[in-house]
Image 1 (tube, rainbow, N blue to C red):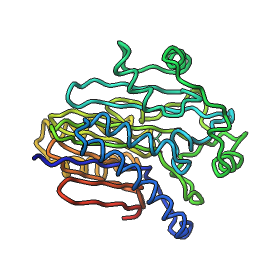
Image 2: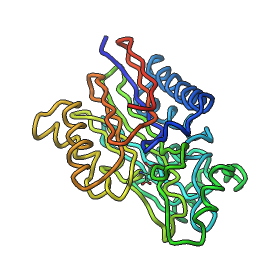
Image 3: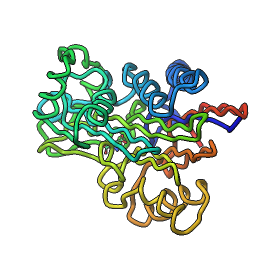
Image 4: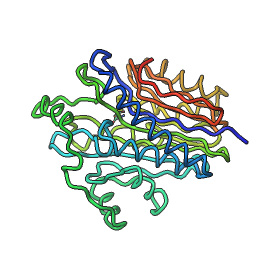
Length: 309
Ligand code: ASP
């Protein structure tokens, strides 16, 4: 049987080791382990890569530890605006949503855009209208309330600064989430979900819902989910660039993702990382920050759950 695999991330950034208590580290690792195991099970039980990445991301969205779904950061208006995307490497079909509110699992709405609409990307009020037509439950603000996130926002509220979950030294808790998977048929998929930046305004949207920037999948090359300073990831078209280096330059998954994260992104001062798989089940998880919440599991027997380098 072909090798199958899954990799997930819960955000990359400058984690200050001293801020991380053993209890917190254990909590992160167990949240990663749960999402990894549930996603892996889907493939093990003959499910496809698209379902596996959706399931893994849903578990991460349901944890208050990560900046996606339940744990989403606060906008300048004190609300939560979430973005998510998903792509099927077999068909090149994709779905994405941005600036949505009150949705427990944005990744599922992105998947519904892919499967139940004629479109790829729905935003704001329109995306919410689509969700309502599909009878999505709209969660109360209190579902997304988290004291840590709220304090993080109070510190910069009413100022012009915004804050990537990554960038603050004091922050030991951050993280856009994502998953990539290769199933038993060698089909691959990627999904990414985020609450964006603390105190963001003007309808700011990062790379996470943008196909080609924060998320991409193509059976011919790779499936990629990114995390980091979105503005740089958009400009560098990161996820598609990894695919292009493989397709047009013949680089391996590992070489291509290293080249993008540790060379091309650094050249424009972009910080972050990505997770990637290819159709042979190979996995790469490079990052140019101090750490990246990440985990991977392969049918070859390898399992990894790590935070720091
Ligand atoms: N890339 C995300 C954004 O810019 C943030 C993150 O990865 O944490 O919205």
